[in-house]
Image (cartoon, rainbow, N blue to C red):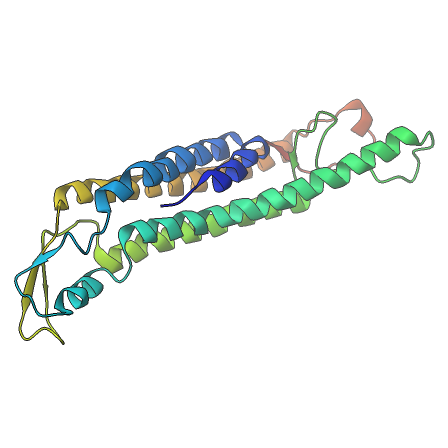
Length: 245
């Protein structure tokens, strides 16, 4: 299915800028989806159409039956699912790296100038480079998670309506150029069903983790609103709700 190394490296960078639940979600995505899809699923499916046997030899009939049963192959569908689900995370990574770059420049200015009055202070990172989820950063992070939830749910529902969650051993079809009703038999339907259910379970786990992360961020924000951590440097500054990863 191609080389997933570049995407895996990008997603690995997100781990250091995510919450604890976000790290678990990335692990599920990298190990149980990308690695399994790249290492095992392609060998199980292979050229699925050539492994299908039909009870008629009319030229083109087998192609028509396969196209009706599978508008898009399972493996390509899962590739699209991973790409779409990863997209909001990659957008968040680009935003975070830009924020960190700007705030590192702010710190350099603060170190180089003795008179710090009037200078803008870093807002989203502490002196150790740890992210503080608040303001625009928090909104971007939550928005990316919500978009990921929508993509995940849409692909699960889409898979159900396209071809369900079971690989049927017998497919029936009709229409040009087939002269009559045709029966086609799929190769290794049980093994393919296991993989379909596995990818479904992993997708549902990812969806639950995304929802849990939303509630985690809401809970942390509410906790810091009630009991804000005040450092000596921030003692006289107006309070801002923030959530640490």
